[in-house]
Image 1: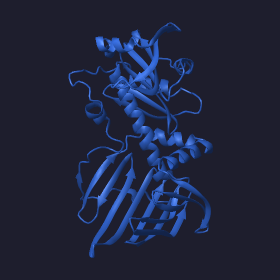
Image 2: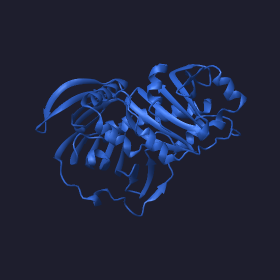
Image 3: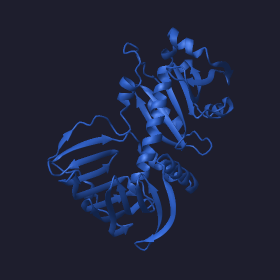
Image 4: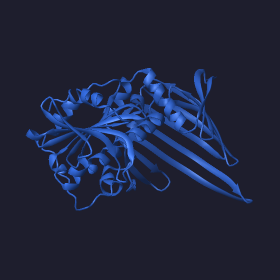
Length: 360
């Protein structure tokens, strides 16, 4: 049982933190655009940015030279890099030595749809939480490049942002100053699909992990459960699971992603950066062990609409409370358990509101 719950929370953290981080950096309120930035200060050069479909397609090319002086010794470093985001993969390329890395985002296209369906108030709440998390502050609005920009100070930098697009930044850290300013910005233009083609003749290196860490890493290292402990796949069809969870409506939560992880099905729903719930389908064989039954004994047990259910607080391996709740529903005819895990906690009544919509 704990194995199921820890996988759930790893996925929640992965989607919650990294998806919103991606949203803040590559998600624009402008459908398409081209930005030409001039770099000055310790780093001189240019940054060129193309994006389409609100940032789902993204390309950034940087040509720069950085000069720093430490203890009277001056050093210089030249860079020519490419960053391309396409089909859920981030490609980072060093054009000087023709090497690169590919990082899977583990974020499904449904996440972008969820963001597009969010209200302006929800988007603002997400942005405010991100800004607060990084210790930032809003400095009001400022006119720049003939556009009304939001001026924000965060991580030692002051940035001017127009609908998610950074048009100017000023940073000073440890006595080193860097500035970026837009020389050209064209918005809502047609970007040729060839712009986002991946360069050939690149020697691709294996990254240490996918963006947000790989789900394989969750099951092998992060989870740290006994390697002899077998995970039993769900026999219920995955496409039918997708159809069922796709009909769930609860408060202002939006479905952000659906995964098939080693035969366990996981659907994540997000309201804000700190409010998530997850629906997981797992085999009922996962609770047949004595240890699983011992953990399940700590839950309250009841029958609702003819199904046996268990509700309680989710507890971590060290026995600490995770400020999360879990409702576990038995489906013996399908040899399946459905777990609804919420962070922060839901009441039993709230969890049952979701459970009543699940027509497996």
